[in-house]
Image (tube, rainbow, N blue to C red; front, side, top):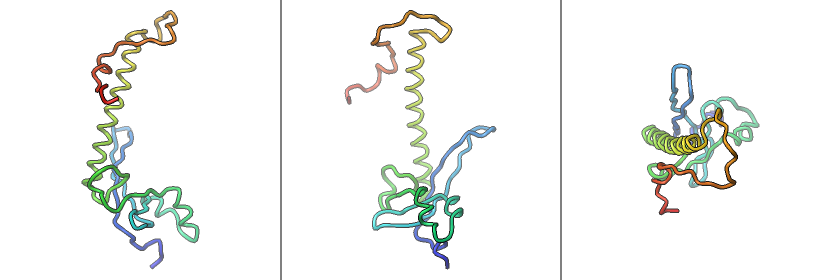
Length: 145
């Protein structure tokens, strides 16, 4: 059996999304193990695994590979998981963080536009430093800073 076809470890999964004309496309990408150390797997997505072959396969795959720990996949954060359920949980967690970051950006923009007006409104040049009151930002947990 050629070296490319040997199964070195379990397949790994990661959910990703992209904008498509019909809405949000969510895909479960499959990653295969191409190498290992005592503590880690080296994985690449199926596409790149099937794309390269021959004597230079290893050097060509090196730029696309990711490293994931063999143990501890149920806890913490990692790029891909050997279990689709854990991969989906990770995707949902990433999306919840994305919502929080987007909400902060939105509130910052609303505060600035609320203070200065939109681009159609002419304003005098403000001082170099000023604080625009924003309830959302004030309600953040500032005691941890």
